[in-house]
Length: 321
Image (tube, rainbow, N blue to C red; front, side, top):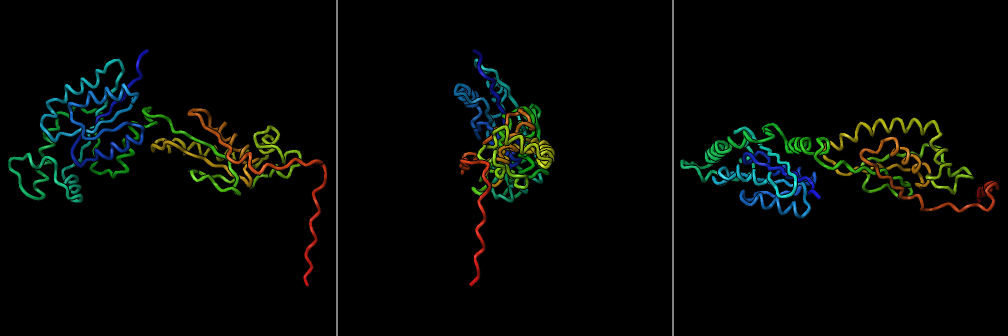
């Protein structure tokens, strides 16, 4: 039996260009990330991860030592070759202008990692600039080999994260699809704490006040037919499906792994249950949508011994003394 395909992403580039942000974004997409890994250990690290069932690996590498460039070509061949598994390898190179890198080092007050390698080292700002120029010279051949070059000069950390998600996220076919749940609930028990979107369907006619439907759950065909047969329910479903069809791909594109859509009525037994089932069916099965009826069994109405009996008379008002 062949091994599953292993996807390896190497993140490299200029110091201060956003390597850590890119690795965090890949980690959010389910990659097993290793930062500052010595170059010669990379093939063995990938092989160990593959044998352990880890199929999405991201490695953060830089050129703080000159040996990096000399060994890099052989390391790439070793990583891509694999042993019994299929591998895809992508190299992401992060670049930025000298001015933006100089500003970032000034804001963090950290020295450039290559400043000490310069023969004509000068103190302060010029030392950082010397390190940037030296690093840029060393990385020129590697930049030419990169699959993706991202210029972060004008990108915020959020925009860089969005760029990485666009390259390797679900929208690019490189990550598991977003898991979507539709949860029905009763407002009397509180809204789900993990809900991302909440819809209130208490404006619909309540089957609770229909004698033959009162004791039945919203999953029963009779209750579902009653609720979904309401003109307001049809209009609500049409508009809500249009909204969700528009926003769900946007959430997925932003790298969201889980999305919970909550639909509530008073007790969570009738209207919200029927509407949740209908929403899930209308949104389709790619990817599959999970439906959870949180409160459908809570506070179940007692079946009347005589369903046809009239409701009890109201108590007379209390006379004022």
